[in-house]
Length: 113
Image (cartoon, rainbow, N blue to C red; front, side, top):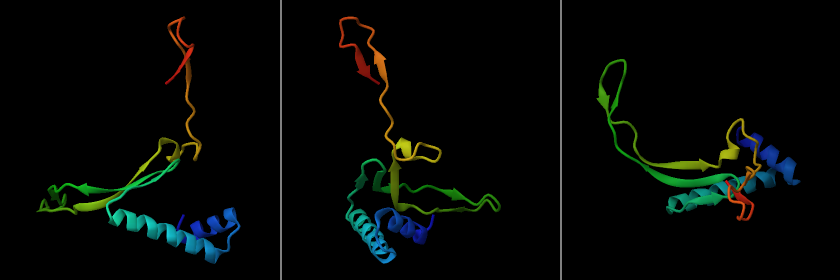
């Protein structure tokens, strides 16, 4: 999905015009970018956390020529996703807790795992 398809989806699901949905998306991206530039992280419950991570310097090698060169390193933006949002997952549904009977008969009967 590209930006214009995302704007169309936002406009359709929120009863906004495409212009307003585009402004909302641009505002969201601007707010996330400004927070990351300050070194903050942006946590969206049910989706994931955007954060800034520093990539360590390492040596790289061109496999065709064997020449060694320094690969790109520095500061990168990282999105840590929640497990339910991965491709093939169940969308944005939270994973349910499993109820397992307690091995102790005197216990409360259930604990969550």
